[in-house]
Amino acid sequence: MTAPGRPADDPAGDPSRDLSGDAAVRATYDTIAADYDRGGWVRAPGRALDRALLAAFAAAVEPGRPVADLGCGPGHVTAHLAELGLAPSGLDLSPAMVARARRRYPDLAFAVGSMTALDAADASLGGISALYSTMHVPTGQLSVLLAGFRRALLPGGPLLLAVFEGDGHRDVREWLGHEVFVRFHYRPRATLVAALEAAGFVVDVELVVHPSPDDRRRHHLLLAHRRPSDPSTDGV
Ligand SMILES: C[S@@+](CC[C@H](N)C(=O)[O-])C[C@H]1O[C@@H](n2cnc3c(N)ncnc32)[C@H](O)[C@@H]1O
Image (tube, rainbow, N blue to C red; front, side, top):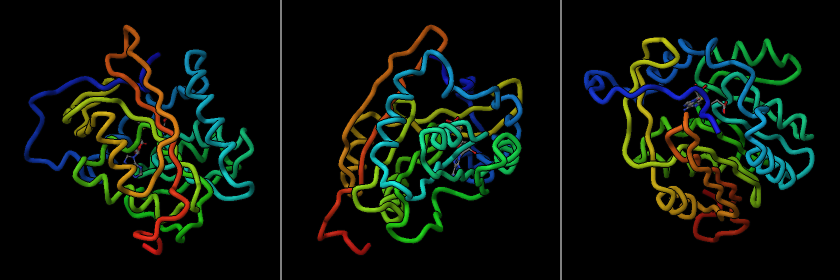
């Protein structure tokens, strides 16, 4: 199983820049958009398990409810969700990614924006997917991110996450032949599960895919849902 364009390491990093900030993430994905957009991992023969989890996610969405694909990149996952019968829209920080998604899938809605500031109304989304896109959010800000997801989701609504498993962070300066400046944050599986539970989610399924020869890290896919009723946090 190959990663979606695995970046190269740069342990030295550049401490003078905020590599986790929106500006760094946006500039990085704007720079690599054309090379990243090679048809989409979601259609690759080796990703059958991922598609099975996407199908389980789709089956858990209340019919007719809008679904947000956060950090949608070039929109291939968003389009796959539409093929599964959902009504998804894509959101991404990178205008270049959103432009590519719009060109490829003109019938779908894509917007530029941040998953850290969702403008969806409370309990309005039938489901949220965020595949390989939450890794730029520092672990210290994870609870705020997940609280935002929970707020926007319908009680019982599913959340599908995919990340690379690990611990700590990695600063990347070269990716797909381009100079970039961005930080990836990795968390142990237990950290992500605990953060989800603390934010009001129930974790239903975890899928851990061990690395193939050209893919050093384990993929961690996680299907959860918003806990239907929680008196301590309802109304938040
Ligand atoms: C590795 S790509 C994954 C794209 C797509 N989800 C996929 O699986 O092919 C990560 C995407 O997340 C976006 N992203 C990162 N942080 C974001 C944020 N805070 N809000 C919205 N998009 C973000 C990036 O711009 C990039 O397009």
